[in-house]
Length: 169
Image (tube, rainbow, N blue to C red; front, side, top):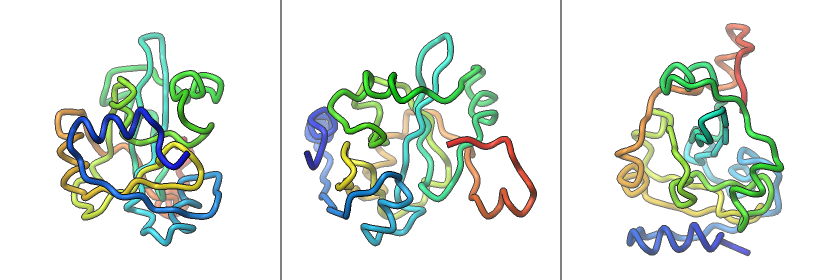
């Protein structure tokens, strides 16, 4: 597949330059970063949540874990992780589990992590398990600038050090 049609159309419509990075087949964003030799903090992964009011996609660095409680506090919602069945319906042109972080392309609301504010290059899932889309950090932030952002994740090492357990993603 290389890149999901919806994502490609969105990037083209917004005149955003990008290139593709091929990697061995993987099952997680973190493994994709390792396989593609991309710094893990530069790969932005999408975590889809839902509540009675609909869906929200959280975008965080691939080496971090989402704190759903922080997202709920920031958005005044009661979100929880979305099921794989619902993900397949929301991202019809993507392989299961390969959700692009630019969820605005799919008309879904997004909140993104402040840890992505100063990253020079951003990589996102292209919609399959063998390709990443590479964007300049400034282009990524320009597309995300009107969307809510906050500190919504922490690294696994930090969580292990303080015994945190309220993390998802």
